[in-house]
Amino acid sequence: MKLLRVGTAGAERPALLDPDGVTLRDLSGLVTDIDGALLADDDALGRIRDAAASGELPVLDGDQVRVGAPLGRIGKIVCIGLNYHDHAAETGSEIPAEPIIFFKAPDTVVGPEDTVLVPRGSLKTDWEVELAVVIGRTARYLDSAEEGLAYVGGYAVAHDVSERAFQIERGGTWDKGKNCETFNPLGPWLVTADEVPDPQALGLRLWVNGDLKQDGTTADQIFGVGEVVRYVSQFMTLYPGDVINTGTPAGVAMGRPEPKPYLRAGDVVELEIDGLGRQRQVFKDA
Image 1 (tube, rainbow, N blue to C red):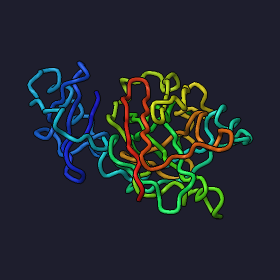
Image 2: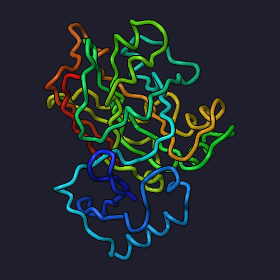
Image 3: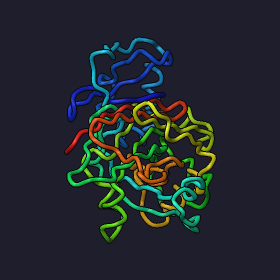
Image 4: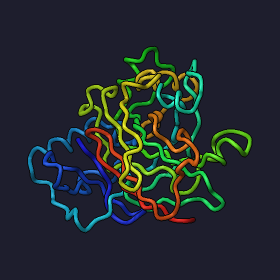
């Protein structure tokens, strides 16, 4: 299923995208939100599947409604750095022996077409298309990558917007360059795990002002999705509704020759992942 949340920011309602890829169906009569509690409730998910198959869910006017982030009440956002061979190469970094972990605050999440703000004083705002993994079951000390995959509730497109000077040149951890307002557009859909049989076979692409910048595949990940979930579960408990951003392929501004084409107000970024939908953001000054 392709689940989403539509409406004004802070007042989104749960919805379903029909298999035709066009028609939106209102789920508010069945569930209160698309969140971790829903993903952990097999009975509720079954009711949605049955209602969708019946064709009786109310239709929403998709042309007149904002699409918000497809997941409400996000617990935490765990991010994996340098997780693609080609991205590590373009930045001159060694292949990590273990996954690099940092965090984004849930309040960085916005909808897939919401405005993204270039922070005050920023000269190095960068783009990163990423596969987001949404946890569907509580995970502690998992034993294998196969078990890790079994704890995934769904997948989504994430844009891990980054400010490289804040991240790298200002001391401390990466978090200063990752947690600026609006720095994690998510969506448009949360695609349930049953619709993604192989998360290591997804193409990822990103354009800036119509120019293709990133064109990669999750097959190039250093640590695959199942291994990432297993690994993270050794250090923290993962709960339904937690999100893991799994890294970005080559093609970011930081990896390009000088003058590096960092983002400015007025730039338009579009990104997509096979089967998970497409985003579009206009950048403005904060």
